[in-house]
Length: 230
Ligand SMILES: N[C@@H](CCC(=O)N[C@@H](CS)C(=O)NCC(=O)O)C(=O)O
Image (tube, rainbow, N blue to C red; front, side, top):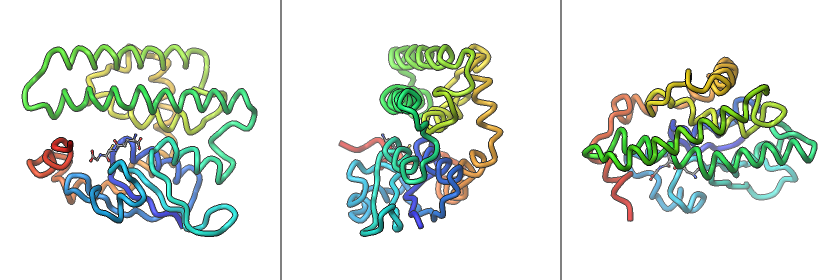
């Protein structure tokens, strides 16, 4: 059994989608990031950066004490290694998947996160920030689109690298990105979107948003927990 410490967000979806794809038994442990659960000592003990997702695997390969993992990219690699799936076996394929996973973790995710912040949550529009992160988002979508020209997935087979990028591309409309500008990325997005395990991963824990944030609206308490940290 794997505990998934989770709230439904793009980084959270990476873990829930991979768990669904790999048909691993898991249970969701709610970390309501709008209510400050990410600062609880028991969560910080497994995720010292006070961010979801994190997992605790009570049945690690080789047995022994439970294994905890934080950082969505590390979780994806851990689950791929545990099951021998979602990461190509040959060295070239594995490196390609790892490169594009790192590209997502260091580039696409953080830049789209900042773009989303300034688009949706800044108290007033800040044109410089919107232009800066809007440009960077378009540049990264272009890189993804070029990579996907003539290929089905970012590595030679469906892998953790696709799951990582797809989970952020899912928010393209909120980020003001027109997928029509990126036809290869759109084709890839739609193929992955049609996977039943992806739908199940995105649906996992959706009731947490409805129940806790009135459909995702950001209230004052959430703003304080999420954006008042130093
Ligand atoms: N690099 C981290 C980022 C995780 C992250 O930013 N998680 C957000 C939700 S998508 C979070 O937990 N935010 C809580 C907070 O800001 O306190 C990962 O990929 O796991």
